[in-house]
Length: 91
Image 1: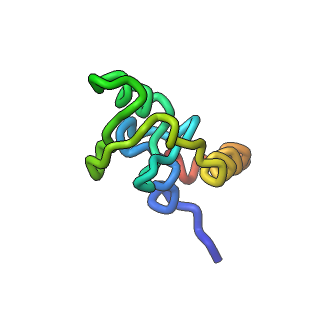
Image 2: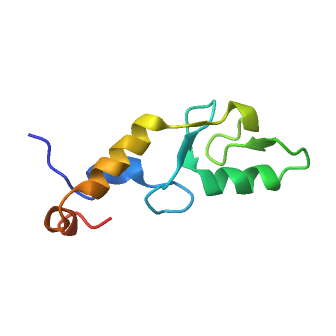
């Protein structure tokens, strides 16, 4: 049986913000970040509409970044759990 633990829910946490993602977006390299992070990455670049992944340093174009629907659904599921269950996990 699957046990919900803090460690088992690290997939929901943005590696830059260290918080549960609200709008998980996946880069072409496969890394996922909250949309806020991607916006910041794009703004920091001299060329608008492009960025660099903070984990693997691969360049990406803004148009190639997509919403990670599977992860978004999983996060919504987690948030819908009763408070009693979530309090034992506490992200």
